[in-house]
Length: 270
Image 1 (cartoon, helix red, strand yellow):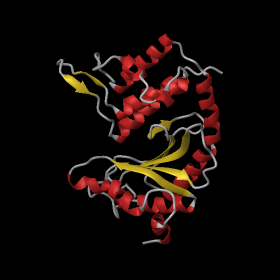
Image 2 (image 1 turned 90 degrees about the vertical axis):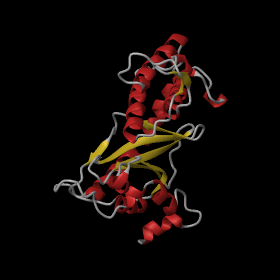
Image 3 (image 1 turned 30 degrees about the vertical axis):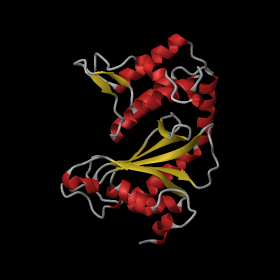
Protein backbone atom coordinates (compact mmCIF):
# COMPACT_ATOMS: atom_id res chain seq x y z
CA UNK A 1 0.00 0.00 0.00
CA UNK A 2 1.44 3.38 -0.96
CA UNK A 3 2.45 6.05 1.53
CA UNK A 4 -0.16 8.49 0.23
CA UNK A 5 -3.01 6.03 0.65
CA UNK A 6 -1.75 5.22 4.14
CA UNK A 7 -2.16 8.88 5.08
CA UNK A 8 -5.93 8.41 4.87
CA UNK A 9 -5.70 6.48 8.14
CA UNK A 10 -3.36 8.94 9.83
CA UNK A 11 -4.87 10.31 13.07
CA UNK A 12 -6.16 13.90 12.86
CA UNK A 13 -6.09 13.93 9.06
CA UNK A 14 -9.39 15.27 7.66
CA UNK A 15 -11.58 13.16 5.43
CA UNK A 16 -12.72 9.59 5.13
CA UNK A 17 -10.49 6.77 6.27
CA UNK A 18 -9.29 4.11 3.89
CA UNK A 19 -11.58 1.60 5.59
CA UNK A 20 -14.59 3.88 5.06
CA UNK A 21 -13.74 4.38 1.39
CA UNK A 22 -13.37 0.67 0.74
CA UNK A 23 -16.74 0.07 2.38
CA UNK A 24 -18.57 2.89 0.55
CA UNK A 25 -16.97 2.59 -2.88
CA UNK A 26 -15.34 -0.83 -3.36
CA UNK A 27 -15.22 -0.20 -7.12
CA UNK A 28 -12.71 2.59 -6.55
CA UNK A 29 -10.21 -0.08 -5.52
CA UNK A 30 -10.66 -2.32 -8.55
CA UNK A 31 -7.38 -3.58 -9.94
CA UNK A 32 -8.63 -4.18 -13.47
CA UNK A 33 -11.59 -3.34 -15.69
CA UNK A 34 -14.81 -5.32 -15.85
CA UNK A 35 -14.36 -8.38 -18.06
CA UNK A 36 -16.87 -7.22 -20.67
CA UNK A 37 -15.39 -3.78 -21.38
CA UNK A 38 -14.26 -3.14 -24.97
CA UNK A 39 -10.68 -3.38 -26.26
CA UNK A 40 -10.30 0.42 -26.49
CA UNK A 41 -11.08 0.89 -22.82
CA UNK A 42 -7.94 1.88 -20.89
CA UNK A 43 -8.09 0.96 -17.22
CA UNK A 44 -6.85 3.60 -14.81
CA UNK A 45 -7.58 2.82 -11.18
CA UNK A 46 -9.59 5.34 -9.19
CA UNK A 47 -7.18 4.50 -6.41
CA UNK A 48 -4.31 5.91 -8.49
CA UNK A 49 -6.35 9.06 -9.02
CA UNK A 50 -7.02 9.21 -5.29
CA UNK A 51 -3.28 9.10 -4.62
CA UNK A 52 -2.65 11.87 -7.15
CA UNK A 53 -5.39 14.08 -5.69
CA UNK A 54 -4.08 13.49 -2.15
CA UNK A 55 -0.67 14.61 -3.36
CA UNK A 56 -2.27 17.77 -4.79
CA UNK A 57 -3.83 18.63 -1.43
CA UNK A 58 -7.31 17.14 -1.82
CA UNK A 59 -8.92 14.74 0.63
CA UNK A 60 -12.07 12.59 0.28
CA UNK A 61 -15.00 13.97 2.26
CA UNK A 62 -17.84 11.72 1.05
CA UNK A 63 -18.29 8.74 -1.25
CA UNK A 64 -20.98 6.48 -2.61
CA UNK A 65 -21.45 3.89 -5.30
CA UNK A 66 -24.15 2.72 -7.65
CA UNK A 67 -26.07 -0.27 -6.36
CA UNK A 68 -25.22 -3.10 -8.74
CA UNK A 69 -25.97 -6.76 -8.57
CA UNK A 70 -23.69 -9.65 -9.35
CA UNK A 71 -20.21 -9.31 -10.71
CA UNK A 72 -20.52 -5.62 -11.69
CA UNK A 73 -20.49 -4.42 -8.09
CA UNK A 74 -16.72 -4.24 -7.95
CA UNK A 75 -16.60 -2.04 -11.07
CA UNK A 76 -19.75 0.10 -10.87
CA UNK A 77 -20.13 3.85 -11.14
CA UNK A 78 -18.93 5.64 -8.01
CA UNK A 79 -18.73 9.24 -6.82
CA UNK A 80 -16.18 10.73 -4.41
CA UNK A 81 -16.41 14.29 -3.13
CA UNK A 82 -13.11 16.02 -2.35
CA UNK A 83 -12.21 19.15 -0.43
CA UNK A 84 -8.89 20.93 -0.50
CA UNK A 85 -6.88 20.80 2.70
CA UNK A 86 -6.17 24.55 2.57
CA UNK A 87 -9.83 25.24 3.35
CA UNK A 88 -9.20 28.74 2.05
CA UNK A 89 -12.65 29.25 0.55
CA UNK A 90 -15.84 29.12 2.60
CA UNK A 91 -19.07 30.22 0.94
CA UNK A 92 -21.78 31.33 3.36
CA UNK A 93 -22.79 28.05 5.04
CA UNK A 94 -21.16 25.84 2.40
CA UNK A 95 -17.82 24.22 1.70
CA UNK A 96 -16.72 23.97 -1.95
CA UNK A 97 -15.98 20.48 -3.22
CA UNK A 98 -14.65 18.78 -6.33
CA UNK A 99 -16.72 15.77 -7.31
CA UNK A 100 -15.09 12.84 -9.11
CA UNK A 101 -17.30 10.32 -10.90
CA UNK A 102 -15.93 7.17 -12.47
CA UNK A 103 -16.61 3.52 -13.21
CA UNK A 104 -14.62 0.51 -14.35
CA UNK A 105 -17.39 -1.14 -16.37
CA UNK A 106 -17.39 1.49 -19.18
CA UNK A 107 -20.66 3.02 -17.93
CA UNK A 108 -18.97 6.35 -17.20
CA UNK A 109 -15.92 8.36 -18.20
CA UNK A 110 -14.00 10.27 -15.55
CA UNK A 111 -16.11 13.31 -14.73
CA UNK A 112 -15.24 16.28 -12.55
CA UNK A 113 -17.85 18.70 -11.29
CA UNK A 114 -18.03 21.55 -8.84
CA UNK A 115 -20.07 21.01 -5.71
CA UNK A 116 -21.08 22.60 -2.44
CA UNK A 117 -21.57 20.81 0.86
CA UNK A 118 -24.07 22.67 3.01
CA UNK A 119 -23.41 22.07 6.69
CA UNK A 120 -26.90 23.07 7.82
CA UNK A 121 -28.62 20.17 6.10
CA UNK A 122 -25.66 17.86 5.38
CA UNK A 123 -26.80 17.80 1.77
CA UNK A 124 -24.48 17.97 -1.21
CA UNK A 125 -25.37 20.47 -3.91
CA UNK A 126 -23.95 19.98 -7.39
CA UNK A 127 -23.43 23.19 -9.30
CA UNK A 128 -22.73 23.98 -12.91
CA UNK A 129 -21.49 27.46 -13.74
CA UNK A 130 -20.34 28.60 -17.14
CA UNK A 131 -16.88 29.42 -15.75
CA UNK A 132 -15.94 25.75 -15.54
CA UNK A 133 -18.96 23.48 -15.90
CA UNK A 134 -18.20 19.79 -16.17
CA UNK A 135 -14.86 18.28 -17.14
CA UNK A 136 -14.99 14.85 -18.76
CA UNK A 137 -11.86 12.78 -19.22
CA UNK A 138 -12.11 9.63 -21.38
CA UNK A 139 -10.36 6.40 -20.40
CA UNK A 140 -7.32 7.02 -22.56
CA UNK A 141 -4.22 9.19 -22.59
CA UNK A 142 -2.71 10.76 -19.48
CA UNK A 143 -5.84 10.46 -17.37
CA UNK A 144 -4.24 11.07 -14.00
CA UNK A 145 -2.62 14.38 -14.98
CA UNK A 146 -5.82 15.56 -16.70
CA UNK A 147 -7.98 14.77 -13.67
CA UNK A 148 -5.65 16.54 -11.24
CA UNK A 149 -5.38 19.58 -13.54
CA UNK A 150 -9.17 19.61 -13.86
CA UNK A 151 -9.65 19.46 -10.09
CA UNK A 152 -7.27 22.38 -9.58
CA UNK A 153 -9.01 24.35 -12.34
CA UNK A 154 -12.38 23.90 -10.65
CA UNK A 155 -10.91 24.89 -7.28
CA UNK A 156 -9.56 28.15 -8.70
CA UNK A 157 -13.08 29.11 -9.77
CA UNK A 158 -14.74 28.67 -6.38
CA UNK A 159 -14.31 32.26 -5.24
CA UNK A 160 -16.62 33.37 -8.04
CA UNK A 161 -19.37 31.08 -6.76
CA UNK A 162 -19.51 33.14 -3.57
CA UNK A 163 -20.62 36.15 -5.59
CA UNK A 164 -23.36 34.09 -7.23
CA UNK A 165 -24.69 32.88 -3.87
CA UNK A 166 -24.62 36.44 -2.52
CA UNK A 167 -26.79 37.44 -5.48
CA UNK A 168 -29.15 34.57 -4.71
CA UNK A 169 -29.34 35.70 -1.08
CA UNK A 170 -30.19 39.25 -2.19
CA UNK A 171 -32.88 38.11 -4.62
CA UNK A 172 -36.26 38.00 -2.89
CA UNK A 173 -38.99 35.90 -4.49
CA UNK A 174 -42.63 36.78 -4.08
CA UNK A 175 -45.07 33.96 -3.40
CA UNK A 176 -46.05 33.40 -7.03
CA UNK A 177 -42.39 33.12 -8.06
CA UNK A 178 -41.79 30.59 -5.30
CA UNK A 179 -44.76 28.52 -6.44
CA UNK A 180 -43.63 28.62 -10.07
CA UNK A 181 -40.10 27.53 -9.13
CA UNK A 182 -41.47 24.71 -6.99
CA UNK A 183 -43.73 23.55 -9.83
CA UNK A 184 -40.84 23.58 -12.29
CA UNK A 185 -38.69 21.69 -9.80
CA UNK A 186 -41.37 19.05 -9.33
CA UNK A 187 -41.44 18.56 -13.10
CA UNK A 188 -37.66 18.09 -13.01
CA UNK A 189 -37.92 15.48 -10.27
CA UNK A 190 -40.72 13.54 -12.00
CA UNK A 191 -39.57 14.13 -15.55
CA UNK A 192 -42.06 12.98 -18.20
CA UNK A 193 -44.98 12.50 -15.83
CA UNK A 194 -48.29 14.24 -16.37
CA UNK A 195 -49.37 13.94 -12.72
CA UNK A 196 -47.29 14.29 -9.58
CA UNK A 197 -47.68 12.46 -6.23
CA UNK A 198 -47.85 15.65 -4.13
CA UNK A 199 -48.46 19.38 -4.50
CA UNK A 200 -45.47 21.50 -5.44
CA UNK A 201 -45.99 23.81 -2.47
CA UNK A 202 -44.77 21.03 -0.17
CA UNK A 203 -41.31 21.69 -1.60
CA UNK A 204 -41.41 25.18 -0.09
CA UNK A 205 -41.81 24.02 3.50
CA UNK A 206 -38.68 24.66 5.59
CA UNK A 207 -37.38 21.68 7.55
CA UNK A 208 -35.39 23.92 9.91
CA UNK A 209 -35.39 27.59 10.90
CA UNK A 210 -32.07 28.22 9.11
CA UNK A 211 -33.88 27.64 5.81
CA UNK A 212 -36.69 30.09 6.48
CA UNK A 213 -37.09 33.23 4.39
CA UNK A 214 -38.02 34.31 0.90
CA UNK A 215 -34.58 34.70 -0.65
CA UNK A 216 -33.76 32.67 -3.72
CA UNK A 217 -30.92 30.99 -1.79
CA UNK A 218 -33.26 29.87 0.99
CA UNK A 219 -36.00 28.72 -1.39
CA UNK A 220 -33.49 26.89 -3.60
CA UNK A 221 -32.04 24.99 -0.65
CA UNK A 222 -35.47 24.00 0.67
CA UNK A 223 -36.53 22.67 -2.71
CA UNK A 224 -33.21 20.92 -3.35
CA UNK A 225 -33.26 19.06 -0.06
CA UNK A 226 -36.86 17.91 -0.53
CA UNK A 227 -36.14 16.68 -4.06
CA UNK A 228 -32.95 14.80 -3.21
CA UNK A 229 -33.70 13.54 0.29
CA UNK A 230 -37.36 12.68 -0.30
CA UNK A 231 -39.70 11.97 2.60
CA UNK A 232 -42.71 13.94 1.32
CA UNK A 233 -46.05 12.23 1.76
CA UNK A 234 -48.46 12.09 -1.15
CA UNK A 235 -50.57 9.76 -3.29
CA UNK A 236 -49.55 7.33 -5.98
CA UNK A 237 -51.18 7.24 -9.41
CA UNK A 238 -53.55 4.61 -7.99
CA UNK A 239 -54.54 6.76 -5.02
CA UNK A 240 -52.51 4.91 -2.40
CA UNK A 241 -50.51 6.76 0.23
CA UNK A 242 -46.90 7.17 -0.80
CA UNK A 243 -43.70 8.84 0.38
CA UNK A 244 -41.17 10.30 -2.03
CA UNK A 245 -37.93 8.34 -2.03
CA UNK A 246 -34.40 9.59 -1.57
CA UNK A 247 -32.48 9.88 -4.83
CA UNK A 248 -29.81 7.21 -4.77
CA UNK A 249 -28.78 6.84 -8.41
CA UNK A 250 -25.73 8.97 -9.18
CA UNK A 251 -26.82 10.08 -12.71
CA UNK A 252 -30.27 11.06 -11.43
CA UNK A 253 -28.76 12.95 -8.50
CA UNK A 254 -26.58 14.91 -10.92
CA UNK A 255 -29.41 15.55 -13.38
CA UNK A 256 -31.81 16.89 -10.77
CA UNK A 257 -29.17 19.03 -9.08
CA UNK A 258 -27.97 20.59 -12.32
CA UNK A 259 -31.44 21.28 -13.73
CA UNK A 260 -32.58 22.80 -10.44
CA UNK A 261 -29.46 24.96 -10.29
CA UNK A 262 -30.15 26.29 -13.78
CA UNK A 263 -33.74 27.11 -12.81
CA UNK A 264 -32.45 29.06 -9.83
CA UNK A 265 -29.84 30.89 -11.93
CA UNK A 266 -32.57 32.17 -14.23
CA UNK A 267 -34.17 34.02 -11.31
CA UNK A 268 -31.11 35.89 -10.05
CA UNK A 269 -31.36 39.65 -9.95
CA UNK A 270 -28.11 41.64 -10.37
